[in-house]
Length: 117
Image (cartoon, rainbow, N blue to C red; front, side, top):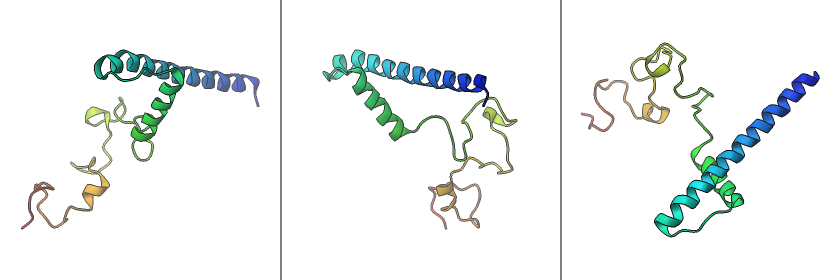
């Protein structure tokens, strides 16, 4: 391996760890600023804020990735809001669980909540 690639990898790892620690510090400062004053809650130490930050990331996700690793938004693509068109028609963004409840023989303009006759 090239020494420069190893140093580059170590630099990116250090940058990632530094940004993660900075985000944890911001969570701690925001918590200690707002929660004790508004809700009479406890103040957090850095390690507690780290645990809270990790728990929130596990529960709510690690960022803007869709199924298949595509990033939400951005400036790529030719469609509205930066999304490219993949031939899915008007409802290309409709989730899979919604698609299983739609009757293909039903009127395409009816909503999912309207009763089917």
